[in-house]
Image 1 (cartoon, rainbow, N blue to C red):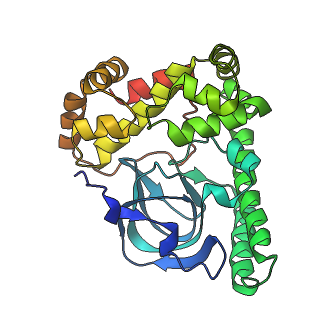
Image 2 (cartoon, one colour; image 1 turned 120 degrees about the vertical axis):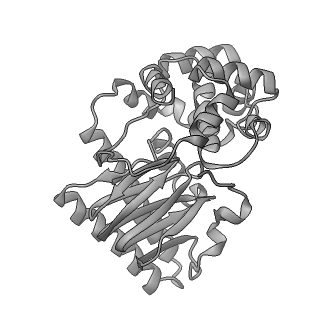
Image 3 (cartoon, rainbow, N blue to C red; image 1 turned 90 degrees about the vertical axis):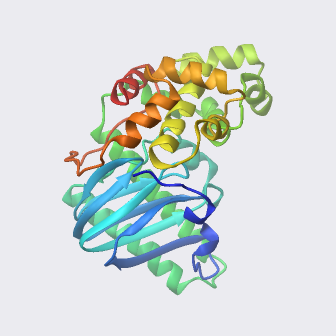
Length: 313
């Protein structure tokens, strides 16, 4: 069953009780399932006890103690509780943290659960609890916000470190962290669904379009247009799997200026027209999927594009 993700399905930072600090952190126990939703912020969920599932962007993953889930504003998810789930949670806006650390997180494969080992379990529990305690004890302190920010940044950096240590398949991932490409990637990921062009990105980064095109291809291993199209196709497929929006609405919400161009690119990417893809996946019965609890790597390069295409055919 697909869901219509309108504004009422969005969880916003302003909905949280943040005790004066622009970051939210809490420990909680879920006794009931949480319905499908999305956020206007980033979210980390770490599960300590219990049993259930996360349905993320249309895929069902088992959740057990030691599971870490990271969500970006483009991820849709719901929580299905089988046994009460005890969890630690932090939420933040991208503007709440250091821009350099934020740029490091661009391209991280959010939306797929990470199963941490015992050593990292201890580390992440300590970090999450430190953030929660900081929020409770120092919310009125002039340095409380800064302390909370630095602890959240530590969670982000440790997540990236875990990924780098446990995933060596993607040789191009290191190219994402070159200093002259950070700001460009952040801008693209914020604006890919707003009819972004090479010229607009070049103007924002103060490069000539020709130089930016050459630099981007050199650093990322694929052309600028292909990278943006991959983001748009990935986002469009999420909307089709998780909403009841029309193909036309999805076309424009994914950053395309015309339905004909969207249809052509979509069919080239998935070997199905948007209507065929939507009909095929809408009719598919979403049963429990025994998905291995490991990090599903989908960095945006030429190899992952082919993998993504094949997975969604």
